[in-house]
Length: 111
Image (cartoon, rainbow, N blue to C red; front, side, top):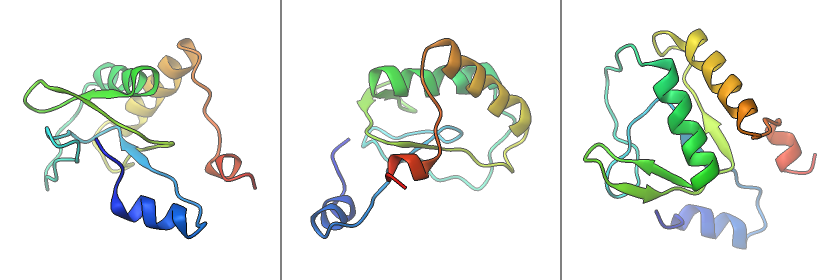
């Protein structure tokens, strides 16, 4: 997925910008999230695997099975997703097991 115009403009203006990866949402072949009003119960281990893959490889599998590049500094996760507690626990555990450090956004911005 290419860099968005909004990201480029903000960076050029010297504004802090944090790009997000949506752990609990699907991606389309264009690299954008697929918006849906209904998100059912997700498999915590599958979400954790998706996040680890995105962090380590910079890719995500789309709804059609394509692999697309993703660039991000932050993982977005919706607390109202069914089973969110189990999902976040699986993500944290798998990230730690794979050597991915979780830090506050403020550290990314140097604050």
